[in-house]
Amino acid sequence: MQHVFIVGSKSMGAYGGYETFVNKLTEYHQNNENIKYHVACKANGDGSMDESKLEGAVKISDYEFEYHNAHCFKINVPNIGPASAIYYDVAALKYCCKYIKENKIDNPVVYILACRIGPFMAYYKNKIHKLGGKVYLNPDGHEWMREKWSPAVRKYWKLSEKMMVKNSDYIICDSVNIEKYIQSDYAVFEPKTTFVAYGADTTKSTLHSFDEKVVNWYKEKDVTPGEYYLVVGRFVPENNYETMIKEFMASDTDKDFVIITNNNGNPFYEKLRMTTNFESDPRIKFVGTVYDQELLKKIREDAFAYFHGHEVGGTNPSLLEALATTNLNLLLDVGFNREVGEDGALYWSKAEGDLAALINKADKLPQSEIEALAALARKRIADWYSWEYIVAEYEKVFLNY
Image 1 (tube, rainbow, N blue to C red):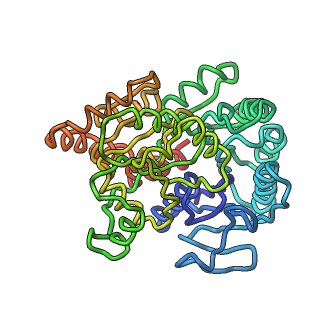
Image 2 (cartoon, helix red, strand yellow):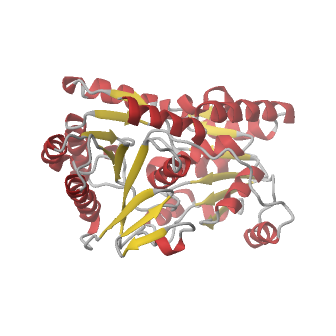
C-alpha cells in the first residue's frame, strides 16, 4: 500500500483547481487497493471544509473524516491575512510528519500543491526523508507574475518557488511549458520532472433547455442561448479582461459578451469601468457567479463561442472545460493555451484590432467549420485530458517512481 499525503488544496468537493483535482483523484481511486490518500483540508476561514455537506463523507472526529476512502484531516488556520495560506501548508506538513511517525508508515509520498512554503522546505524535506518518505511538488503556474501581488510578494513567490524546486524529490508539472521552464530556470538543481496534465469533465450537462432552472437564468440575465460569447474565470488583470472587453466593443457583432466572475467589491472592476466605459455597451453583461456546476456546464454548451485570455499559469481548468463543452473557442495565443487547444481553437493576440477582427470572422464562420473545430477540441480533451486518463497517469507516478 502506497500512502500519499496531499497538502495545498483547501477542501474536498469544492469548485477550484486543486480542490477539483483532489476530489477527482480520490473519486477515481477510491477502490484502488494500492494507494491510500491522506488529504489536508482547512477547518476554518476562506474555502474551509464542511464535510456535513459532502455526500458520502463519514465523520471520524471533529477534525477527521473519510471521503472516497481517503483519510481527510482538518487544520485550524489563524486569521493572519495572506500569510494564513503559508501557515496552513506548514501546519498540514507538520501533521503529516506526526501521522507518518505515529502510524509507522513506510515510504510515504508527501505531495505539495503550489510553491507557497519555500523557506520551510529544507527542514521538512529532511524530516520526511528521515521518516523514509519522498517530497513531490506540483509547482502550479507563474504565481510570481500575477499583477495582483505587490513587488515584495512577487519576490517572495519567486524565491519560494526556487526553494521548493530545490527541496523536492520529484516535480509533477501540469503543463509541458511549465516543465520546460522548471528544467531551464532551475537546471542547477537537476530537477526530476514529469508532465501530468489537469483533467476535464467530458460529460454533457444533465440539464435541458426547457428546464426551469435554465429558462429562469437566461430570462433573469437577459441572454439568449447561442447568441453570446462567454468567459468564466477569476477577475484578475492577467486574464486580460480589459483587452477582451475593448476588442469586443470594437467589433461589429450583435451577440452579447457574458462574463461569469465574482467582481463584487473588486477594485479591478472599477478600473475597467473607467478605462473601457463598458457600461455604454449593452452587449457587455457581467452576470455574477454560477456555482451550480450542471447549470454552468449548460451555459458553456449554449455559448456561441468562448474567450480564454489567461496568460499566466499551466493547464487552466476553465480552458479544458471550454474545449470539452463549447463549440467555438477563441484563445489568447500563448504557449500554455496553444499546447492544450492545438488545432481545435482559433487564436488572438493582444495587438489592437486583432481580437475584434477575429470576432467579426467568427460571426461569419460556416456551421460546418465550427463543428469541425468542436470535434477536434473534444477529441483533444478526450484523448489527453479526461479524468480517467489523468488519474491513471498519477497512479503510475505514485507507484512506479
